[in-house]
View 1: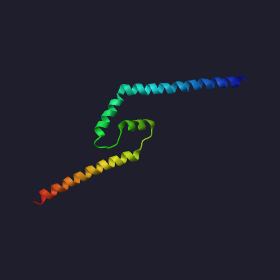
View 2 (view 1 turned 90 degrees about the vertical axis):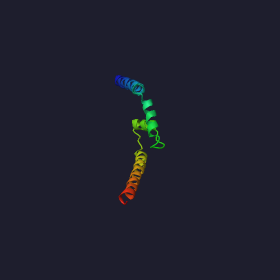
View 3 (view 1 turned 90 degrees about the horizontal axis):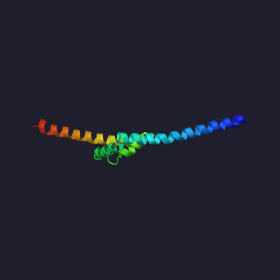
View 4 (view 1 turned 180 degrees about the vertical axis):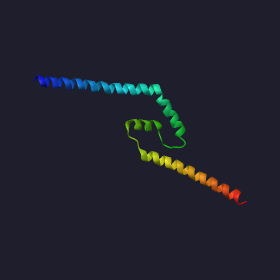
Length: 104
């Protein structure tokens, strides 16, 4: 019977320890977010990526990265579109340069 009481006591102690850890981790994350000024970083990131990456929310991306839920396909598609557009513009510029200046 004493063994059963000890097991229950140990179980209750561990239950209390894990409950305290969850509250502390949330407080730590919030204090680090405030200290590092994450909100301002997200606002600046949204401001600078607004033109290049349509529909990309830096805050949601950061939150997903912290949780480990990153959608690589969407990110790669957006980067691919951006580089594809830049490469097309570069090739068009090179073609226009050679057409106007090299054959005259």
